[in-house]
Amino acid sequence: MHRALFVSLMAICVQVVVSPLAADSLWSAAVSHFEQNRDVYASRMQTESAEFDGRGVRRSHREIEVAVSVTDTGEFASRLLRAREDGRELDPASLETGNPLFGSDAQDAGNEGRAASMAAVEQSPFDPLIQNTVSFVRVGTARAPGGSPAVEYRYTQTGAEHTISGTAWLNPQTGHPIALRASVTPLPRFVREMTVEQDFAVNDAGWFTTEVRVRADGGFLFVRRTVHVDLRFMDHRRSPVPLRRSIPS
Image 1 (cartoon, rainbow, N blue to C red):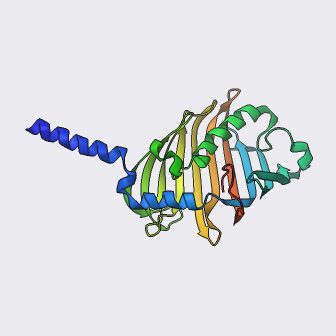
Image 2 (cartoon, one colour):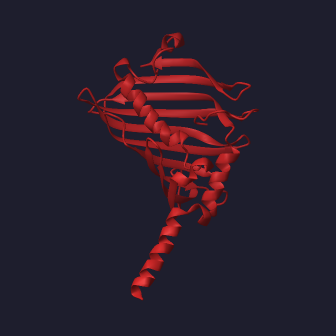
Image 3 (cartoon, helix red, strand yellow):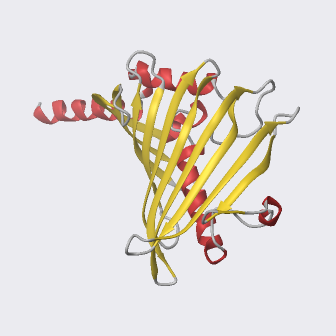
């Protein structure tokens, strides 16, 4: 009898773990908000990147600003407005090749790290199309990183190339996501540790991303490096046509 009871309890636990969406209306609301706001995008983005040596001394600092528009077919078109390196203005035309966020000696490693970190942003755990790859546990009431009341969740999202594990904070009344904090495995080459932070807001345009911060620590050519990348998304608007692909909004 005891064994039968144990098996029955295990079956109940497994059912709760593998089908959490049906049991949590707040998470379902977050998924709904994601679907309703797919066509909201930032028409202006600012990105700031900095590299530090093993002693914490900043070795380089880059800033770029990009304007984003949407074509009649729902594709994104971007235009580099401004670029600065270590306080010096750069000619945007000189940055047409390569990634302007990284120095010439770190292009490959930088691009790989960016791809991994952006996986945590572009592959949202609230996307209804990938809910079968997401598992989560509701932790309970808490304060979001900005201090507002929230309900905290721990989640894991399994993708073809990366597994994303993190914490999400949802508005306890509406279910709007307030913030995400995540890590990615496997890590890119040369990276020992990496975290991705994402903040959200709501206004008349809808629900959208306001800021993404990436912090990575590792080594390249036997030299320890710490990299900070901050992305700020501004001037949000709703596209008049359905967007064909996703970028951080």
